[in-house]
Amino acid sequence: MEEESLTDHLKDRPLHLAEAKKSGRKIVGFFPGNFVPEEMIYASGAVPLCLIQSGFRAADAGLAVMPHIICPFARAQVGERLLKENPCYNMMDMLVAPITCQHMKKVAEIWEYRGDLEIFKLGIPQQYEDDFEVEYFINGLKALRGRLEAFTGNKITDEKLGKAIELYNRMRELLRKISLMRRISPSPLSALEFIKLNHASFYADPVFMVEVLESVYQELRDKKPAAESIAPRILLTGPNIGNGDYTVLEIVQATGGEIVVEEICGGIRNYWQSIENQGDLLQSMTRGYLLDRVPCAFLRNASKKRFDYILQLVKEFNVSGIIWYELLCCETYDAESYYFTEKMGELDIPVLVLESDYSTAATGQLKTRIQAFIEILEGVTE
Image 1 (cartoon, rainbow, N blue to C red):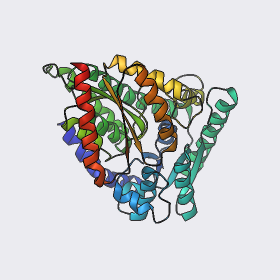
Image 2: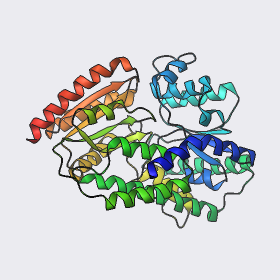
Image 3: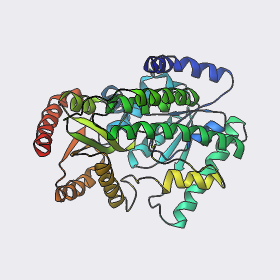
Image 4: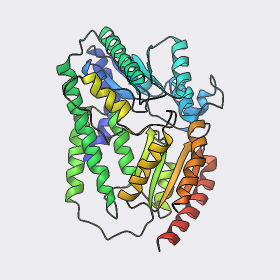
């Protein structure tokens, strides 16, 4: 029932956004990566939308203005604006672009060059452990707050920001509780179902989304446990899972595997940590969005921390194998996959590295490789 309610809400979301714009609210889009504080956008009175659409058609359209060496997800963001078919991309009044990898930086620059959208570039330090970098990020958040206040005409008070943090913390908490349920065998919901829920949280009204997650959590708690599954338990890691990029998830499920947890830098909401809602709230958001999280590959000194964290997830979720899923031309993750695979091999944890450009032409090869990997895992777990 809740799934139908959420589906209907997302279907009607463009209409809701149009009504919000008529009433004077601004629509503020932002790129994924979990560096842009939605709470601040929400506290300004604007509607936050994370831009996570993926797919070969949009990525191919992006080739009109970007070279093929730019990753498919980045090209898809440009392609969505060129195609003019997605209302979430069409109705934006402002874009907040975290400057992470060079690919997403170029997307922001191309959108800025076209000149039809307010652009704010949020600098992300490549190092994140020293006072200098922390101060740099805080100053960026201060500048973002000022720009949002000027753009919306609304003051972002600590009271408004605190209420927004409370709301989004509840959303993160519920996603965390639902995800932790996947530690049991079989998981009460599939990876595809969980990631679609996660993706919906970027588009849905946050108050409505919290209500949905409350119901989903209660429903899963009340669900009668099924017989224990013998399907190999898999961890999925990599740079990005966009909305609609579900081929690997579907193939794993269809060929007898079970993805039980993900460690993905972009396209999935980071729900493992909440934001401290007291004291200096900019300091709290800096800790939550920069310091206390698992670092992405483009950050220096990130590999060891993420490797150790994934090992922790492997143990906690009883994982027997890992799928490393990256997009074509994602050079930081591609370079790191060698180190990661070698280190996991030393611990006898099988790893399958997959690369995609969203093309359906490679689906057969993906299916063959995933099927062979699951057969290996079935032999390991017997």
